[in-house]
Image (cartoon, rainbow, N blue to C red; front, side, top):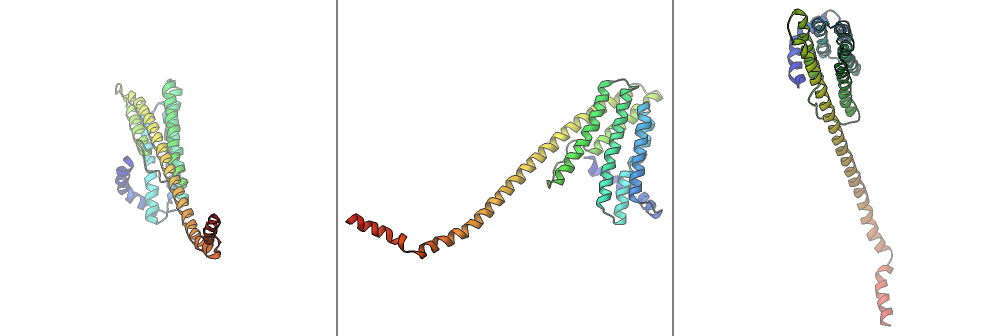
Length: 255
């Protein structure tokens, strides 16, 4: 949902910066790699220590690389399969680092096994949600549903909540509870999205198989009809015996 509007907005905003990097000879792949490294550092250095505010600031600065590299590729006229593969793969790595950072906090100083488990579920379900669409498309299905919670929603909800929760260390009371609420929202939303995509792939697969069966049946019928039409007259014209047989039988009966 957010992808449709937020991506278009930030693409326009970041276009001048992308053009600046191009003029400096920076490649889209380099931006992708640096951005992912920054997200990983922000998540795994700050989050396990409970420094959610500063960790979120660092992650936010680098997470926009996901838009900058694509913008640069479009300006350069480069649409490579390698670039798409690298970008998608490193997105999964960055997401894993963010939710892994939450899990490490709750497994350690945060001391909450339930929220540690929820964080791990968010990590795993996010990977599987992305995989269902990629796998469905790889076998020729459109997967014509994005679902309730895509990557953009997962990141926005979790990062905003983490950043605000970090204000607890600056004396804002009670705000630290936003992060657990956000993690539960992401977990439930990811589960719903996973179910939506699996159901969609199952339906599209059944429809594709039914269409293939109908096409095969129609082709078989089309091949059989000309042969049947040819053999009928030929069989009747080749011998007069079938036509004479009723008459002969009639003579026999008369006898």
